[in-house]
Image 1 (cartoon, helix red, strand yellow):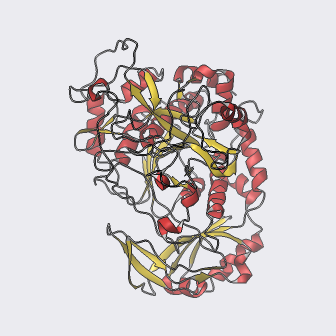
Image 2 (image 1 turned 30 degrees about the vertical axis):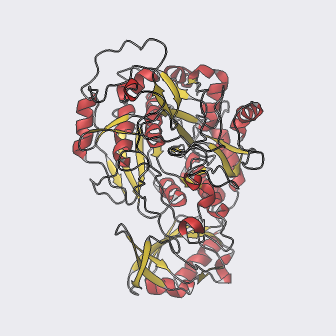
Length: 596
C-alpha cells in the first residue's frame, strides 16, 4: 500500500544458489558483515528436488479449472499431486542421506522438496562454505554464507534449487516518493473509498456476507511487515459500518504495531468485502514466491483464497545490481521463477485461489523508475506474472461527468476531511489521478508462455492501435497480465486514525474478498471452491462481457511521478493495464450459479 510515509514497492526476495558453485564478489550495501556465525547456530534452508511430469500436472490443472470440462472443480489432494510429480524415492533418499552425514541435521520432507534445519558447522561441511552474521540497516539480522559454496556431484543431478543460504531478503525501504496533489483535476473533486462504496461500484448487495465456515481467506505478508493493531481494525469496522472478524489462525511470526500500513490495508479490505469469512493471518519468515507456494501447498488446511500484495521485477529476481548476489552461475532467474511457477501450479491444483498485486510503478516498474533504461523499457512483475495466479491491477474512481449516484447516508468514516465518492466512473490508476502520483502495473511475463485461456483476448489486444513498447522490447507471445482490477486509490483505512492509503495492494484484497463471497455461494450449494480462477474469468468474459466493467482509457507508461515513453495502452476488452476490467458481482454470481 501507499501512504504519506511510504510510497513504493512491497518487495522481498530470496534466491536460488548455483548447483555447482556460487561465488559472490559483493553483497547488498544495506547489509553489513559481522562476525563468523557460531558453529552451534542453527539455520533453515530449502532444497527443491528435481520434479517429474510437470507438464502433465499443468494439463490436469487446466482441465479441472475449465468451467466447460466435465472435471470442473474436481480439485486434487496434495498426495495426488505429489504422486504425479515427486522424484523417484531413491533420488530423494540420496539427497537426504548426504545431508544426514552431518550431526544435528533435521530434514522435513515434502517429497519433492526438503526443509532443512541444521547447525552452521554441518552446513559449512556439506557445502564447503563459511557462514557469517549479517545485519541490515533496519536491525534485521541473517546468517548467510560468504565466499562461495559447492554441491557434490553425487547429488547435484537430483537438485533443482537451493534457497536460504546465499542471498539476502530485500527489506522494504520507506521510499520517499513525491506526495503531491493532482495537477490535472482539483483535489477536492475526488472522493474517498470504503467497502460500502466498493459494494455500490461492483453491484454487490449491501448485506452480502459469508455464512459458511468453509469460506476461508487470508492475507499473506512477509517479514519484517508487522500485523495491524486489533484496535485499528475494530475502529475501522465501527466507523465504516463493517464487521471485524478476528483471525482463527495465525501462521508464522506475529507482532503488532509499526508504521507499515501494508498489513492494515490488506486486513481491513479483505474483511470489508469478504465480510464474516473465516480469516487467517499468514507471514512468510524468510523467503519469496517459491517458499510461499511451498508453505501454502504443504499446509493441509490452507485457506481457499489468498491475497498477496507483494512483487518484484521478474528479471531482477537474481540481479546483482539489486542484490549483489547471484542465484546461479549464469545469474539467470529463470530457474527460480520456473520452479516457483511449478509450485504455484500445485497450489492451483489443490483448488486455492491466489490473487497477486501487479504493483504501483506502471509497466516500467521499480527497475526503470526514472525511465532511463532504454535497453529494457518495461519489466514484468513477479509473481503476478505467473500463469498460475490471478493478477490484480487498480483503478481510480474519478469525478464523473454524469450526475452523481443517489447515496444513502454515509457512515462516520466519510467526513468533511474525507468525503466518500458517489461517482462510478473508473480509470486506471495513473500519476494524474492518484493521491500519491503512482501508476498501476501490468505487462507480459518474461518466461511463461501465453496460456490457452487468454489466447484470444491477448491476440486481439495486440492487433489494436494502442500504445505498446517497441517490437523486441517486450515478450508479446508470453503470458499477459493483469487479469482483473478493482479500485485502489484514496482507500480509507484506520491506523491510529483515519488515513488514505492506496495501491494494487488495496485492489488485491478487495478482489480476494469478492471471490470469498462467490465461494460462499458455492459452498452453500455443496459445490467446490472456485479455486484457480483464470480459466473461469476469461470464459465468463467470453460468455457475457458485462460480467466486467471495461476500463478502456489510459495507459500504464508512468511510474511514480515520472512518465516514460513506453508502456501499454488500455482499449476495449482485455488489456495489460486493467485486465478484463472491474467485477460486476451480480453478473458473476449468475454465471457461477450455472456451473457444476
